[in-house]
Length: 280
Image (cartoon, rainbow, N blue to C red):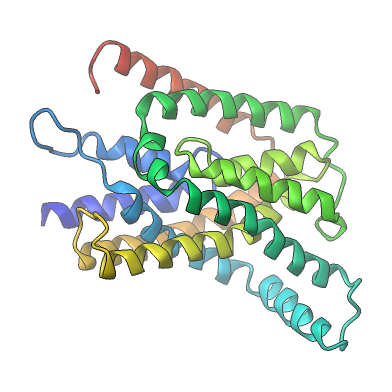
């Protein structure tokens, strides 16, 4: 029962933080520090559990942007047979999501051991929370924020795809990294966030399904049962859907400043706790 409640809490954290530029994987890592654990050894839910419950929040993205996804996918397929002009903005967007996904797939495969181990360092987490909070602030302040979603250029889409690679490090935030890149390239806040969410769909589904495969065939470490993990995934889906609606409405009117301040304060507090030995 204790593990079940822990998994539900982590699913709630995943849903609340996945779409905000504050890092869901980083928050799951931090919340789990306060769970009961063996003496001298901190508890870490692991990269496998984190990747699997992200399937819930990504399903929320798929449903929330269902019209965009079906329109883009439909036109992209029809363009392969000459039934839609290959210069159509939706066709270009389909190719940008595909091409923009390659960098994180390649780097993710090559750095798999680091993702599961070194990348989960709390010192690294505290550092990137602050550094990429400042990056988000600079992009939000200095970006022109005039370009629309439909105007996404080839070079810009690929650049944002490369920025998504940074999300492999807990604390960076997938939406934070890609949205910062979009803002820096001149796109409006809603446009940058919209492309960020669409770009994440194949990467997150691919990662989550790969972790499911590993759990069955290679016995990848996961401290929770499949029932606990499934329950956490459902919670992350429901909460994530609500958060997407809130976030898209919020950024159409306001800046990212509250998220920047939150990241910096959290990073400083984490450094302090590490420095005085409260957490290891």
